[in-house]
Amino acid sequence: MNPSRLAVSLSLILLAGCAVGPDYRSPTPAQLLPSATTETEPEAAGWWQAFQDPALNRLVGVALRRSPDLASADANIRQARAALEINTGAQWPQLNAGGRVSRDQLSRRGEALANIPFANPQTLFTDYRAGFDASWEIDLFGHTARGVEAGRARLDASREQAADAALRVAAETARLALDYRYWGLRADNAAAQARWRAELARLSRLQFQAGLAGAGEVDQAEAERLRADAQLQPLLAARQATLAALGPLTSLPTEQLRALLDAAMPNPRLPAAPAAALPSELLLRRPDLRAAERQLAAASADIGVAAAEQYPRFSLLASGGWDSVRPGDFAAQASRYWSLGPQLSLPLFAGGRLQAQVRAREAGYDAALAQYRKAVLQALADVETALLRSQAGRVQDARLAEGETALQRQLGFARQRVAVGEAAQSHVLEAQLQLATLREQRLAARQALSADLIALYKALGGDMPLSTPPSSAPPP
Image 1 (cartoon, rainbow, N blue to C red):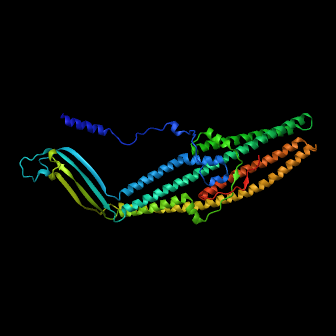
Image 2 (image 1 turned 135 degrees about the vertical axis):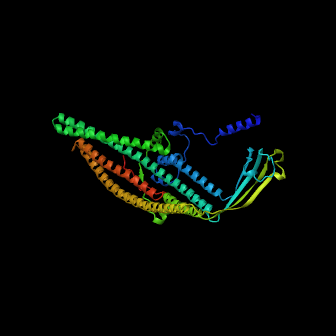
């Protein structure tokens, strides 16, 4: 084989084995599992600071920096931005360059030599060609412009979706952090009840031994002790479960989350409920509604893209370069060629495909409009529901606080009676248990109210002024 041909063949084989772009490698467990971090995370400023919990503020800041949901949302933004750049690039002239070297054999019986008057024309030769092609579509009917409009709307929608994801991540992180606080307080309260029940059971056994109580009273006290012990374990498990739920949000291991939350253990505070927004203000505050509106705008632009497909498309085409069968003449004037002129493309018959595309885009617009209306109605329902629940929670907390105050007075009276010998120690233990039972109800109610307030901030779009907490958690 000719050495030059062999070199060309080997070059083609090597080129065929090359592939641009990254080679896929499966992520390692170390890349996927939560990892500890020692970097200083700035505390983000936002509505969650109304709860006045430094650990909560720090966790939300970490979640907004490290959450996989927000990393995915950021990737969606970059993807939408690249799609917009693709559509925008179609507005500009397109220029391509190329070249080839080929060994050609023409047919002596083909049409290429039919009108050549020579007896023995050359049919085997090597052709050398290099040049460029340029095109520019004149967007008379807005085909490209509508595509750019749709791409820009989708980019805006992806940004709003990222803002909505950040709002959801912040709300869920804040709720779980407060849940951790309340589960801990409720577990401490349950542990105290278990201790007091154990003491009552001990006193009952002593009274039975002294003949002052029956066996039924001892069994009842023992059953109450066991029930108090059983109530503690679910609370501890729920507290641990909140740490596990915080892991995917913050990309932090459980040990680091526990250390961060246990470092500062303030009593959870309830901020004042934010003022409800007008429906018109809600459309501007909530990022999910802004995203739905931008999706509607993109669907409208898609109709224009499909409609423009039915109209003529005009382009300016140009090409030029050099073509020769002899290398020595390649740069000569006679080897040059060029072409310049307009091109018209007019769809005449497509079997109804173009009309169907328009109808499909119109249906897509109607679907996007329905989704937008649904999102607005759901947003109004979210606000109303959160407001009603938070208002009811405030009333419930106030009533339970009054009851707790009354039981605290009763506990004080019982201690006074025991001090002067008018009552047994069991009266103090019974009063403490009644107070602890009511305190459990209040802690559970305040935990639910905290979740309702977070839901209200989230329903209002999160962009709310910070409020001064009117009250703190009940004392331990």
